[in-house]
Image 1 (cartoon, rainbow, N blue to C red):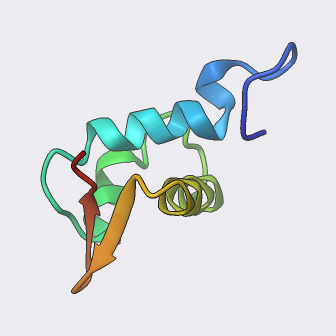
Image 2 (tube, rainbow, N blue to C red):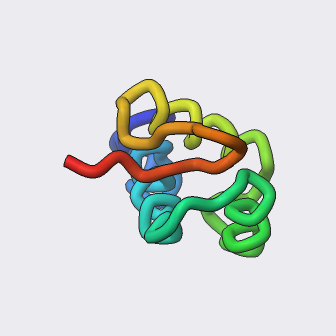
Length: 75
């Protein structure tokens, strides 16, 4: 589920969804705003998958959460 396998495509893996969410984070956004932007995307499908993807990105230190906004970590 996190990584693509023989049976899970990149689009259905959390890593693939993370790339999709990062493409929408060109500027800081609240969770609600980001959810509104991607909720119609077929790969996201549910709020649960959305939050799991955000959790993974946070654990990987790719995003940060400050003052109610999600920020993309710059390298």
